[in-house]
Length: 156
Image (tube, rainbow, N blue to C red; front, side):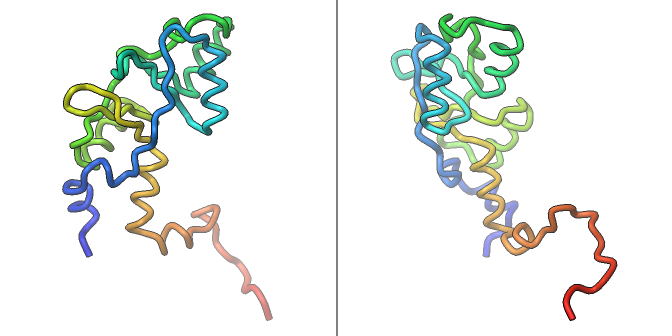
């Protein structure tokens, strides 16, 4: 079995099961983006023009930039999107993706090809699922509270 370190360095981003992006245009109203995020169960939408990402709108943006600032949802997405988006490249290793997510504090990142065309979205959820594959018994047997100590035997 390959080591986790070797896997992170050697495996390509595609090992994380990149998601299909939910795409919107910069002119669309914020309300349309929020509706698409809800309908697709996605934590973000990628704002794109001519197949290239120009911005990202995440659940966190909705809370902090729209609800927190009382921005009208009929305004265009371009008013509140994070732009330019920080992207990862489809030929990056899993380790490079994790590093980019960590350094930027991102939960979702657009994936682009060599031409800069949008290929998908990678999420921290996919990274965690990938890591769980290496430690299934440890992860699935963790108590809800790791500091929990059993004081009495259970059962007869």
